[in-house]
Amino acid sequence: MSNDLWRKTKILNIEIDNISSSQLLQQTRNGGVVLTPNVDHLMKLQKDWDFYQLYTSADYIVCDSKIIYWASILLGDRIKEKISGSDFFPLFYKKYQYDREIKIFLLGGTETSVQQAKNNINHKVGRTMVVGAYSPPFGFEKEQAECQKIVDLINSTDATVLAIGVGAPKQEKWIFKHKDRLSKIKIFLAVGETINFEAGATKRAPKWMSQAGLEWLYRLVLEPKRLWKRYLLESIPFFILILLQKINLYRYKQEANLMKIQNLDLLPVSNLKINQNKTKSN
Image (cartoon, rainbow, N blue to C red):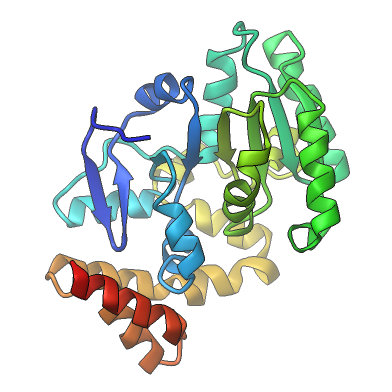
């Protein structure tokens, strides 16, 4: 699906749709895959070739980070709006609460939280909009039988929307690997922690912290053991890469080589060769 109604903003090696939440709400009714990159995603995209390839195949790529929003300003191409998955999803189900063709399947969370999220959303919209919910076991994406079970479970419902929140890049890879077998699903939303937010199992940062770009700090304080490495170590090179892009020195291939020299192993050697050949052919 090609979107020519709005321009795109280049942030490192991906193009983010420079679109408002109201435009996105209207467009997604027609179907498509919606991905919401944050800083963690962008750093993973520097080292995971498969993740990068599927990311560029998404129908909508929107900004899920105030830090990325500010980076766009620094780069001189301001993104219209920060559209996080956890903000967009409730906007989506409220907009289409009376549209009987919009039926949602939730995949993610814990057994308790996914069912609670289902109940909460259906109560808010006043109908059975969420028609199915399932919490997959750890490592499910590697088990063919479990993935087939999930595909069959989704197909057994009338769901036209899949909201999957199992973390990146797992959720995005699962969508692209299995979406062609989900015959009734038209809209795919990669929503991260949103299912737990909807259940009330995980608290969201206060609005002022989100607007100030400090939601990462709030989550770090809540889950330091799980998130310290992501926020305090793995994301630091992002700011270096943005500065390099600002002075026109960032190249996906070149920065991958740079990071390998720094022992950050951002891209396998085989993929570097692929990217080099791609660059030469261009």
